[in-house]
Length: 173
Image 1 (cartoon, helix red, strand yellow):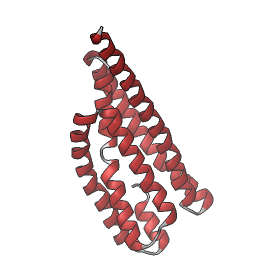
Image 2 (cartoon, rainbow, N blue to C red):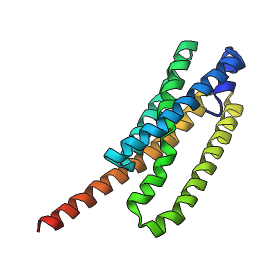
Image 3 (cartoon, one colour):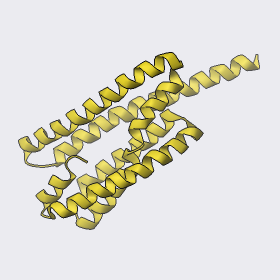
Image 4 (cartoon, one colour):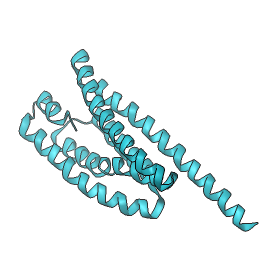
């Protein structure tokens, strides 16, 4: 998101088109937050995080292959539809895995770490662009970190499913 306007300028589409794409991302991000909450109520925070991370990664991957104006609007829309629900899931997951007393303390730390990570990611992506004069490596950088997030989310899903299986076996006995 941080670089979409500059990316559009770099491609020759101008600031206005990049700003429209950013507005599209942010607007659809609101829908993403609300719908992710509904989904988390049904399947859990970790599964919702995994889905959001997978789809965000897919959108980032699409940026590598398409740079036409129409395709950038579509990809920005896809990105917006999934990125907005990712950060709130960290609080949901904390509450699912931790007792209330621990969760309330850790949610602040997790949120702060997330904000620092996003800021650093945007900064490093800018440095990557400065070093390479291309957004390709910056997108790959984002995809790499997205894969880390997706891996952790999938690990949490597996862990949660194992805990539910153990709990159901304990009640069956």
